[in-house]
Image (cartoon, rainbow, N blue to C red; front, side):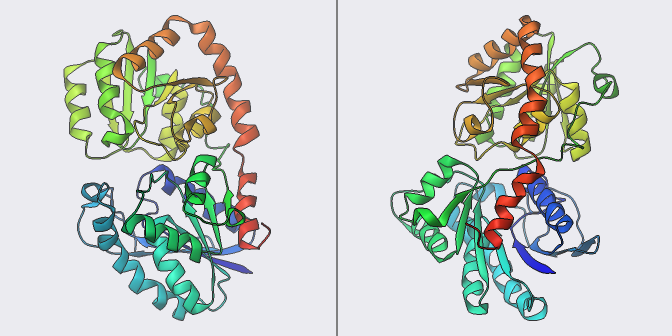
Length: 378
């Protein structure tokens, strides 16, 4: 049986699009007869408990390291401090894991720069193939520690997988050989994410026009712009905000003040599918360079059109056959949402395209790109 070790700072039950991708990845690999190990931290951005060791079926084993503090969001814009905070645990744990369990592991698949640092260092010592995946657009500075670290990680990796063409270009601009960088694409569980009959009634939104947002509650996700827009758009349009993050208090404040805004907290994947089915629109109002926007894929699979920021890799994830791309300002959000509210025929036409779009582009077959990278089929 082929074996792979996935190394990341986060994994479920931590909430986020990347964590959902990991669940899909380990499941797809296990179905294809890979034995999968995961080395990660216990949740560092979500206040939920997790087991130190978890087994899923006979092919998936997850090892979680306890770590101190809940300061991740405070360090997001301070990459050096974030690096100092999160590197030591994985750095200590990885060689111990490889000594005890790593005899038959063929590949270390690291995710992000912190996991990448640890993986390429110990991978070379233990003679393992190392694949590094980026899930974000980093906007590397022109010089300094952050840029030099990224260049070292990517050069030391056997292959770099990027989530978008824009991310691929960013990596290549660090003078990484083009043949070493390859684009992969997320996928969704098309059996889980599909239109659920009676969803509006199940979430008590029957008869309402609903706009849904399930982005981390941080400034770069455009949360401030979104709640401001909802406060000034037609009050017959209801905004439902899910997920967690530092701007939770702000969202709750708007929800108390405006009856057409509600906050439902962190949701399970099944609950996300239910709310997407209950919604007339999904909005992804990122004000930074979004890595891809996984919830877009989930929304399209549920038949729900998307209003997305026309920046980052969002235009690679969708086009205007299934939604609308806009520049994110409160006024632009208001205008786009009200347009679809006032033009139900146009909205219906887009919704008819969504499921087919998702089935064509975002099926589980996308995992084969990753498996090919493990096996050297570049």
